Amino acid sequence: MRRKTACISRRLFSFGAWLTDAAGIDRVLPFQTEATHLRGRLVRLGPLLSRILGRHDYPEPVARLLGETVLLAVALASNLKYDGVFTLQVKGDGPVGLIVVDVVSGLSPDKRTVRGVARFDRTAVERMAADPHLLQMSLVGKGWLAFTVDQGPDTERYQGIVALRGKTLAECVQHYFQQSEQIATGVTLAIDSANGVWVGTALLLQRLPSGDGPPGSAEEDDWRRAMVLMATLTAAEMLCAILGDQELLWRLFHEDGVRLFEVSRLVEGCRCSRDKVVLTLRSFTRADVEQLREDGVVRVTCEFCNTEYRFDDRELAELFVS
Image (cartoon, one colour):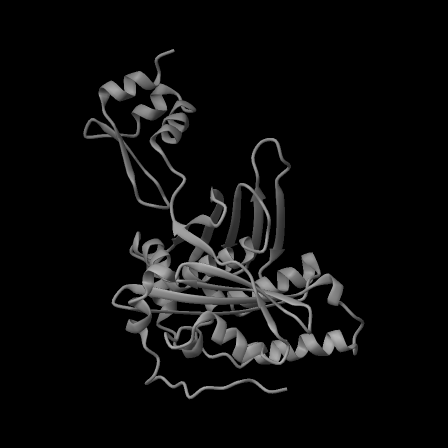
């Protein structure tokens, strides 16, 4: 087993160089290894990640955790065929109580929209962040991980839930597939920022059903070898401007042959609208809505994108016209 290596060090890690090509970063590259029957997704995000994380004043540990959740949600959603909304939720009893990321299909055949948000206790996060040995999932605490696919009212909604098990988000996802889907899955993530600009990469690898074999079989050995190779990837390599998508995959799996498929694009976008806010307000009584009034105006702010919708006296009166 050999892995193609390169002389990549922190000195060669060119954050700014990648950002100069930021317009093409938000993408997913599906691939498959020819000899070992493994399928995967390589996700690279830049502007999309910066916009999602920049919409709220997140402490650095929370922004990093939300960013990794976005990377995972995109990788997992791109592995499915659906027409609707894929949602990844992380919920726990820790300072970061809830993370929600949506990946919506249907914008165009090769493009999906993504949004995400985290709820957290700032004081508790800052207190925990002072610990240099802080484990990532300690911020979430005990809880669960949920995957939901909603394709509309005419289709049964699918949801998978599993308890959080692992020191990192990647380990929790691998535990989910081991326990709930029984699909051998490997995930590695890298995320970094400079001056408020974020970039991230996710590599997801799965063993195809046709490649399954009993313990000790050639298929099992191939899978273990692939996991060893994935473990050799460093964050510097995954985020390096010098390494393109094809080169990164070739260096890992050149002995097995890699088949690349069509790249899909991603954009940051929210599903909120004034019409949806109106429908929500109409679900309450007039008296309840009036209690929301401040300075003569009712304000409703989207938790995801921070867009504010304002309703004055005239607009409020129109809400409740029968």
